[in-house]
Length: 355
Image (cartoon, rainbow, N blue to C red):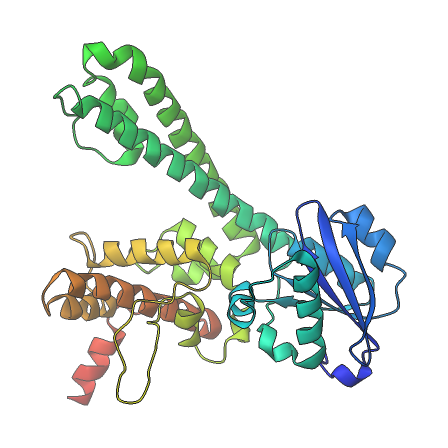
């Protein structure tokens, strides 16, 4: 869609709130035509924007921006969804208000939309399927919190529970509860087991969804350490692999590349940007831990990570995990766009052939 500002006689900035959205309308010369607010509901938006002449509408990404942008586009408007991180860098005024934010969005959208670093929302089906992944993650966090509570409570009376994986915790811990804590903690163990059962049900449902709607996830199955949750989350998060010019861009998109603050001769080593999808980034880091761990199989990824970790120190191990996660993100994208079969020792064999 064209971003030529000359064709737009009306640019609208929307500062979206939970109940109301502030509206600022600029004419072709940049003068404010109208200000006001509209209810942040489908009915409110339809009454205000459905019959309005085709306009450029600018809003910031948020919880409601997906349905709002789809509705506005269906009524013929051009919609720019501003990157919230970029907006924070552009506008850090002391006099902040909903009215001023709406005007700022409208003025930037009118003059130079590229400054907004506009994002593209995923399709409605993809958004719905992402809710499966996120719902499972919420349950996993709740279970982890309850497990930590039980272990901590048992320690206060000088006892210890047997070591076990989280999925087996409720069953194994039940027999080791101190008698004086049984009344307080037994119901917690019941809840932990219920959460475990629900998490497994979500995982089975995600495997069915992946097989039925996202067959490309099968390309990632041969990579040892990348489970069905990560495979589906990766495809749902990227949505369209061809929007990246190169596979290397995916690492930066997911916030797995280091920040940079170079000035003159100074170029300090900084932590990763943590941009993009935090859930997928966590899953990739978990996969990297497994690949580098005692159960990881021999592969180019593992050899690369172990070389970095061998440089010594705790920091080297952390950097190795992040570097492997970044390379894994790049590898998954490469397999996706090419459809090639995964060869865990592809680089090692190439080096032997060259040698």
